[in-house]
Length: 383
Image 1 (tube, helix red, strand yellow):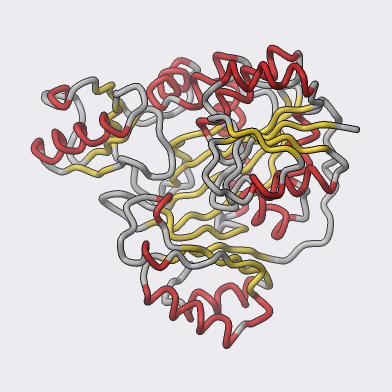
Image 2 (tube, rainbow, N blue to C red; image 1 turned 180 degrees about the horizontal axis):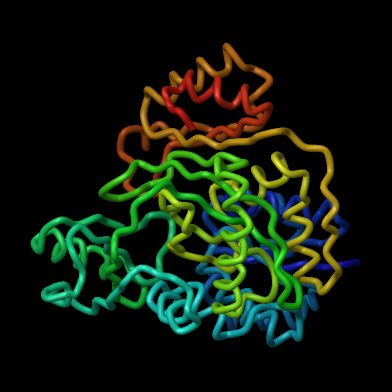
């Protein structure tokens, strides 16, 4: 029987586990035991931390998997690529892992390759923000975290010191990065790569809380990018993927657009976009089996780029407050067929969201563009 190792067991990893089972794989899932859904849906669960690369590799030698995968986790990609490389399975190399999971190394690699990128500086202490060649306001974030953790927009030196202190504390390597603030609407580009060849799947539009912490409140596909700008954006994204040495599997490139359609790359992950972007929105809005592609790429199988039946548009919205819960009730009352999936509500998190990991829940919608726009009006958002 075909076997697959999945690194991570949380709710955003579970669609990968379930798709692998549908494709006939015996699933072996590694994660710290914490009651996550993947512990129950996996054929075999191993209570091992996703960062314990050596312990996982030792187990994988006995499992002899056909593929090692993860989605939506920068931290897990370190282990995925380490284990896959030692087992002789398709994966991105060590340099790619470093550049795609460390924001400072990413900026250096993009700049070296001539890819347009914001000005930046490494912060190793809170005092490092003094005398930077960056104009206020600018952004401070940990070098090696995701999910909006530790991000802040700063307008004064006092704010910058405090934000640098917090970001360094959030960071695994205890470093932060200061970046030039880029304005404009924010999007992401979802791609899949095999043998160094990149395939475009979708553009996603992002909504956030805005400054100071930019926590994602929702995502919509397709994005409202004028068609005449899209080829140029794809070309720039592919150039950036090459600069980061991404050759295998999914990628998620975040960027902002200027008024003339110029794309400014913010970050790129060598993995599927989180927040159900890759696992749900891409297949719902394009018909591409993105999860199946990730599995095939990790197993060294040719990608099936056939687009199946799909909706005209899809979106996810996150719950932050009781008002968001009431808005969801209105959506259910007016557009009951538009809700594809919803999570349980973590009521203890309502009105106390600090980053993406502490949001109170989500719901996913699909339908015509007109139906999605109607939902946006019901929720008080314009999409």
